[in-house]
Length: 101
Image (cartoon, rainbow, N blue to C red; front, side):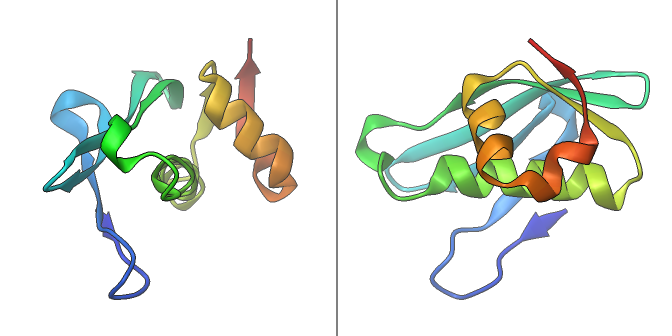
């Protein structure tokens, strides 16, 4: 699954072999790492290279991961502080969250 809603928005790729969503750019790779437990994706780490900070990549990763959960009729766990904060700011995703730490 890839997601790019406009030509200026970076492409997010789902890499199930490494259990992560990723944005690969010349300056580095931004990732949202998860663990799959049954029908739940537990988001536990978001990382954006320093050279790419402040460009909205972590938000794009969180949105894409949560949209993937919704589209596949599964649930999510938010152990990652960034994803937890994203869900707090975007209540339309709160119904997906099964586990919060």
